[in-house]
Image: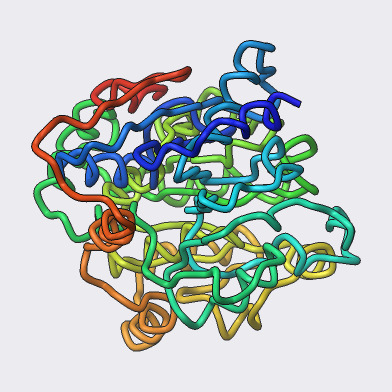
Amino acid sequence: MAYKMHSLLPVKNKNISFLSDSRNDISGNFEYIYEEIKKRQSDFKLAFYLKGSIKQDKSFTELNTLAKAIATSKYIMVDDFYPLIYPLKIRKNSELIQVWHAVGAFKTFGYSRVGMPGGPKLTSKNHRNYTKVLVSSKNIVNKYAEGFGIAESAVIPIGAPRTDLFFDEVRKKEIVDRLHEELPFINGKKVILFAPTFRGNGQQTAYYPFGMINFKEIYEALKNEYVFLLKIHPFVQNKPEIPYEYDNFFYDVSEYREINDLLLISDQLVTDYSSVCFEYALLNKPMVFFSPDLGEYMSDRDFYYDYFDFIPGSYASNTTMLIEKLKKESVDTKRLETFKDYFFDDLDGKVSERFVDILMTDGFADVDEEVEVEQIWGSVDNKNNKKGV
């Protein structure tokens, strides 16, 4: 009702609204888009409507403010599942842009999962009203079109803005130096980052089966040379139960929001079915895919590609194999390059520039004034948003 009422107002061509129910600060793709717009000194008015989880309620006032922003903004950007917006008919002069929080296409999602456990009904309205979606490669346009239930013409393969980090040597060094101060236990050690995806049908039921891992065996084999960081998916409800005597080896950094920062300080990545492998591939470092429940996961979720043809690293089906692969620290360079060539069209660190160019050429001209930023809710201070370790 509020949206319909505010739709009587004109669309403001200078307004951009950023919406998220999975982050409460300006980070990820939003951060890189925001910084690029700010650098241009355009007269866009930016507003951020941020919540850390879809479980966080919005007040009546917040809902009304949000409805007005969606109804009157030229550009509405979302970076994840955003249930409030899907029943709405986006206005003719507005664009609802999904910048998505993941890169590439790996496990099936959205309407690619119709008929699977937790998959959507064909009558669902979720995702279908995006007018534009950003992806990393023309080779996955059809996957995202299918997953979101939209036309392929709405999927734009210009890349993911947050991957610009991997081509910015100054910024990378700043992050690495800061993390070595914030995480002193990594100094003098090789760093293994464990970053699996969740199991379950979504945010409400997500879990990880920690019983698949023998923490004692890993500790005994690797304690002298390595540290083992656990970055558990934010949806996961259960916590790993690691004995206190191993606390000088296993460190839970799950509260640290930006996983790409952690990738920079890692010597090896252990994952399973997570899209984190796409961004880690840009670092040309070893990856081990630890997937003891592969058969079960395939029956529940499935993939866009054959799992063993796809993974750009080693495979381990149990803890003993995992330790063996980690000790080898090997990279199949040819396989990794083929992987990157397929899933990234442009490896140049200029995704944010390309995206903002599109915004700027849609009838907007640069003017010499500061970008006006309005923080509606959430934390706007980028210097202090890397919290939680």
